[in-house]
Amino acid sequence: IFEMIRNTLYLILGLIIGVQLTDFLSFVKFWRDNNEKDSGKNALIKYPVSTEEQLASWLKREVRILCLVLTMPSRHRSKADRVNRTWGRRCNKLIFMSTQKDKNLEILKMNMSEGRQHLYWKVRTGLGYVHKHFLNEYDWFLKADDDTYVVMENLRLFLYPYDPESSVYFGCRFKAHFSQGYMSGGGGYVLSRDALRRLNWFAMNSTTTCKLNGDSEDLQIGRCLQDVGVVPGDTRDFQGHHRFLPVSPLNLFPEWPPGSWLNNYFFFRPNKSDCCSSSAITFHYVTDIEFEFFEFFLYYVRVFGLFSSQRALPSRLSFRQMNERLQFWSRQKTDNPW
Image 1 (cartoon, rainbow, N blue to C red):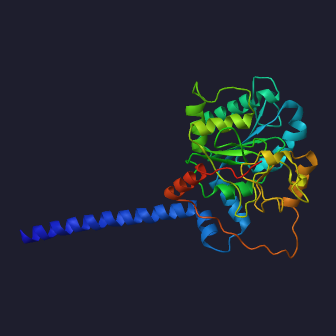
Image 2: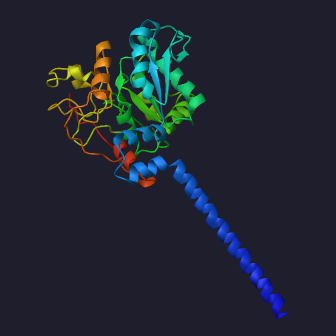
Image 3: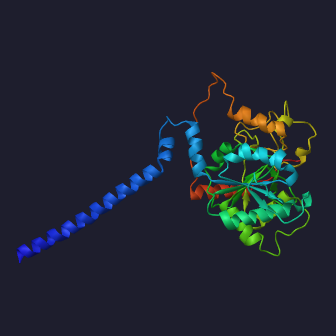
């Protein structure tokens, strides 16, 4: 009997050890698989030998952005083509909104007339389309114009700390007759996945919000987002410089123009001592030659001997930190008296 009990205990002990060993081996396999799958992140974040170029390549996979660009048939060759072969090719996906198909561009064809009075409906239709077909394939959804230039690498770096499942959107914040204000359409605005979800589920399906009232596209979208609890994030850098610019920086040199129409629009008074943030993200009213200018000086010119320290990725915000940030942003008031 004693021998039988001993053998039974050995059997049980062997089973326990076997199960634990299996769990351990599974964990090792899981760790190795994740390590291989996430090797870019591990190598890029933990080790100082990683270059910013490697970080940017990893961020393109980690912060997935769908770009939705307003254009029209008469601007396909002059504007849309330039977006397509410059900053647009750095999007994870690029879709143009136009009323005519084009073999050289990926276009969501709109069955409506062109004209400024139809811009809100075009954007609303476009946002509804990407919500239906691409909501879970991308993290952030950028709306821009065909004369907007976007530094996609800076946009991904800026968005990296934030959870795309938070109810937030970013851009150049303007004042309005409603409390939150809105983001400049020409300067580009980017919606989180949850912001796009709320906009389509609750705002656009409501008979009381998102009414077609003749206001500008960006203002109407801003009002719709406020009504469904989406918070406008602050995109200024630590010096108070705007990262999303509703004009070309060439219009702001050598100094901020006095009496500019922008003075009455900014939610946060701009820092007029110098033009723009060193981590600038968007510019608007970009001319054809300026597209080429920005591409050349941002991506091709390398100044020999110019020191540039290696930068690391910012930390991702925890759930609690993200909620605290949203609450802070939601309580911000305009400091622009104009």
